Length: 98
Image: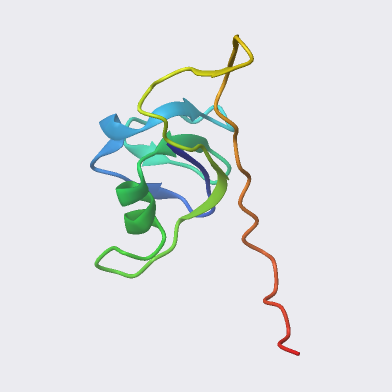
């Protein structure tokens, strides 16, 4: 799953597919997402919300990517360990070529 934050208010028809929705304000209209709300969704949904839609609008920003382990617990030296979470920074400028 990929965690994103809403950058522009929008309505989503596939609202039921979102996981762990956290509202940033007291507004709570079903199907409507407000600036600052965070939620988890699939890679397909992220592509749609970051410009892969009919309008080409980007309405979310990726803040965290969790690796997919087929729901299997990872064991290290006999101790269970949760999958590592990776943070994606989108504001970084590309490196200059030498």
